[in-house]
Amino acid sequence: MIYLTILFCINATDCQTKSITLQKKQTMLDLKKTKLIDFYYKYLSWINKYVLVTLGCFILMCLDSDCNLYKRYKYDERIRSLHKQIKFYQKEIDTSRKKLEELRTDKEGLERFAREEYYMKRANEDVYIIEEN
Image (cartoon, rainbow, N blue to C red; front, side, top):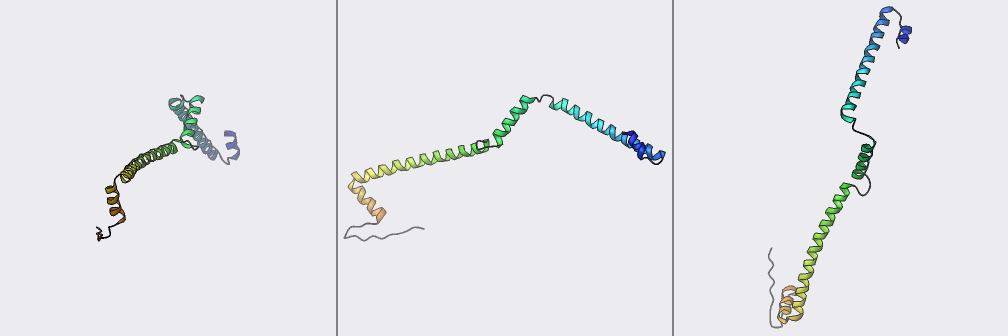
């Protein structure tokens, strides 16, 4: 490198300044390389191919495909909400069955249900509907 700088120099002072700047750049590069090597040995020396493969598989598992952790959490949340709905509708079915059985067996209950739900009346009665807001 120094030989190249001498070829491009016009006078002696110009050559000296160029060679000094090249030496400074070279020492800066050497310092950066040593700092990088020190960083590697201090923090990254424990990494080997097995750790890299394991980390790569973990990243793929977390971020990629249909079975990643985020989607799995959302699916589990949806399943929990559907189970709650199933329980709710099972209770509704049970209460409806009880009401149906009561209507089939009790004549007075059937009459009360018809009056309340369908506003039915006897021939000699008047029905007034009062709605509350």
